Structures are given as structure tokens and as C-alpha cells.
Length: 252
Image (spheres, one colour):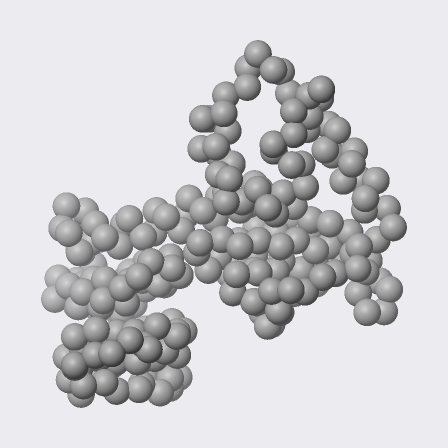
């Protein structure tokens, strides 16, 4: 049986429920990727909070709370077929218990380790590379805005860091790739849809601040110590389109 779900983590948990109580899953596909032809029977799984909650509670009780966290982080990695990796990991954990996360040599656990490492590495990069700009909301009030397009679905992972850093300033972090944004104020945030072509109205002072930062970036560098390989490791080119400082710029 191939299960088709809505692409949410709760929907995936409902597919794990169906795997146990209906029929074993040959594959689990988000609806956006389910257009290709298949010879296997398919079932559209409705996302139900009751079943999702029971599966999540079962993972926490029979394996560990950390196993549930690791499953979620593997899910947001954006890797193809991560659903079947998570299914294999969860049911290995159900058979072994909390010792599963010590079995790093097991191929199933190792795969989850790799996906978790991918998420953690990109989250750390986004915390360092995200650039806010000063904009104004619909009522003319100041607001910080930043846009990103990470490989992983990271908004919920990085938001605690920025909530702690900007405790008084309202801000928005826009995931352009997934057309959604985190709107934060007063230490809390909520996720809302936001089109990829959204163009904020920047404050009048923003161009001057950007030019100042670009000038600092260019003139603070020591030409003799420039290491392109090292820079590209810490600042991969796929993030450059969202940076203010224009990494290709060079000191005249």
C-alpha cells in the first residue's frame, strides 16, 4: 500500500498509524509528489490529531522523547523518501526501546543521524547568515524583516534563537522557498502563509545602512588572508542571494 498524506509531520504520524492498523506501507508520499504513475494501490490518509497524538505519545513512551524529536528533525530535512526512513527508525525503536539511539552503527539509525546532522548544520548556518532589514508594516510601524530559502524547513528550529535575541523588536522571517513566514512579537511567534514574491517596503534609512555594511565587508578583509575554499564552506553560495554584503565584492 502506498499512503498519500498532506506533507505535515502530523500527517506522517497518521500514516504510521495506518501502517499498523490497516496495511503495511510500501511507500509514503506527500501529496505534492504523488503525481507519478504507480502500480501499487494507494490510499489518501486524512490528518487526524487524535491518531497523530497517539503515535507521538507512543514514540515518547516506548522509545524516548528524544526519538520523537529526532524523527521530527529527520522529517524537516527535506530529503526524498525520509518518510520511509522515519518509519523504519520508529518501528526499530518500538522493538528495541530507548537503546535504539545508541546503535549508531545500525544503518537505520545511521540514516536518521545523517538527516539530523543536516538539519543542525543548516540551522547553525542560518543563525549566522540571516540578515534583517528595517521595513514598515501596513500602519507605518517599524519592523525587522529577513528572507531565507534553506534546504530544510527550519523556521521552527531557528525561531527560539531569534526570539531570545530580539526580545522587544517585532520581526518577520520569510521562508521564500516554502512560501511561509514566522511573525514574531513580544516573545511569541506564529506561522502564516506568505507568497514568494512578497516585496516589503523598506524604511528610508535602510539603503544607507546596507551600503555601510557592504563597505565594511569589503574594506575589513585582508586580501592576503582571503581563503575562498574556507569561506565557501562556512558561507555556501546558495545562501548568497539573501545576503546584504555581496560576497563577490572585492576591495578596489
